View (cartoon, one colour):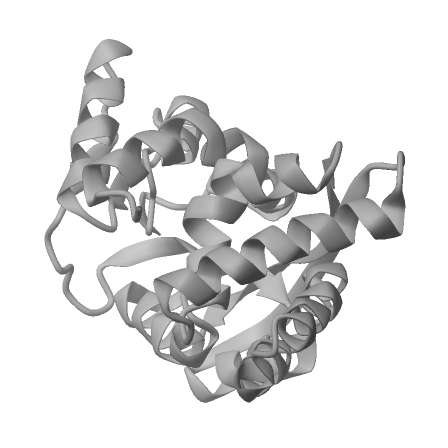
Length: 264
């Protein structure tokens, strides 16, 4: 059964922040300098962990604001901030155009079809000359999963849904494509940094039962199937992983990418 928004918020805090988001934020930390920024906005701040870390590091010179995706994530973020007496300002407000010296945005769960609009909105809130950074998975991610998913659909006689797997592969933007998006959004001095991240699971069961896969990735990947079909394909996927890898762990890769630049 699908999790409620509140349940997903707790899973984001307990599992996804360390298993998933941290892979991307570590890349951002290596290339982000807020020493010259009086204020910054963090879009899609999740449960606030990274925004609070930024506030701790740069808070003496930079006012940090963070926008959470929904009210349940916001509640967790506010509680965490209060516990450590952080000055990070979490809000559900829509901020004005050109309001911030820097903007950082998490697009890791943004549907690929909406990435360009998300980049547009990130650029919108930055001042001219302001620093902009967006992190997200790019083309080449999940390849090991998608190949087995196609086989699972074939085995379960559900090939009418095979095109959805092809769409998942095709929609993941390449680095060249996100750079073009950034340019159309008005960014200049555009750069990208990419790190190949490995996600390892002991067997097929551990893979399909992990919160990252079961509650955040798989519902999107299998969106075109009904509940019975989803259960069949998921079960078959676990069997295929175990038959293919035997006693070896199952590993899939993600191309963690950081897009940076300035508002032109």
